[in-house]
Image 1 (spheres, rainbow, N blue to C red):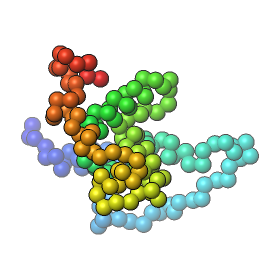
Image 2: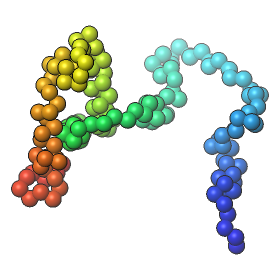
Image 3: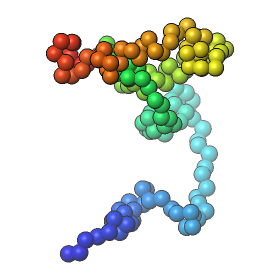
Length: 157
């Protein structure tokens, strides 16, 4: 039996499942069934969500990906904080480092009127934070944070 090429396998998979196939730009055809307006909700459905399709899509897929560079102390503390918050709660959605970063961005945007300065340290000072150098001196690179193999510090959480 000869080996199949990846392109052939993908083509077979797409043909087997028409919901996952994506039409190419050259083969785009007009939709034969134009979308219809959603039916008016019945009087007893007032509390039903207006867009149930959004609740089916996972939250992380509804968000835009943005990459950021963080200091080691920020990464470590965000991990510890997220884990601690998850342990303390009794249900609901999972809290991740990304959850905390989004909250931090929202908090910063809520205080945008207070922001002033031309450098990161000046911006930090304008919202009441100290210089970043004080915190980064405690990074794992400098030996300030416990590691998984460290015998003289608390276990890595």
